[in-house]
Length: 313
Image (tube, rainbow, N blue to C red):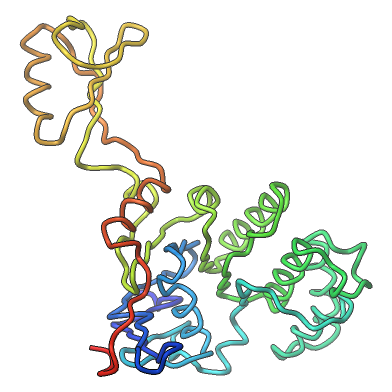
């Protein structure tokens, strides 16, 4: 029996009027995506591609124009389900009260009560390394400290699904390492993490799968390895061949020859005919940044579209 997805969008579209009411903005168009239980899923895209809109629809902060979606087996906006979710917004805005009382407040909103609430609050403040300042008003916290308090409130109710929008954007390298460790432990405990971030190196290190969103649609989805291995170019590693016969780089007696996919068979046969040996054939691995830029450029920058007064098409 197939598992119930942690998060699923089925042909979801969202339009709303722009600043000038004669224009419509299309934030999502026929958007479909499935996030499996127990994975860390990266959610990437240029500014204005529709990522925050998708997150707000899942949380129930707005409603779709068409299509449907489910979170933990219930339709988007199902209030009881939100108690099973931890959410951290991109722009952390918290009540100005002591950190400990603030985390307790958000835990109570999720139905938590003492002594469990008190214990979880203490554990989460320790987890994000804020125990020593638990009594300080968060209004006096730095941006990075606010980010850590926000993460603590997202974790306090021990959620099944974590939805995090730029969780490490204001953190220093040690803080980012700490966040990675927290999210990896969440995955080991069987929880699902839906992570939106512009820190591509962080996403590449931690995510099981990821999706790149361009102009309100999923342009590419898959594991990191699947997405970064370009299938149009290959590197052939060979030995025992005359360097003058091939264009490539030599190192320790081996030659690496980069060829288009269509030339792969021809080059291998040429190596054999020259008496050489093919050691390995591997697709070229791109960086996540290269793939991101390539997809954005292919789609005119990747930002959401504006339409005329006749409304969305």
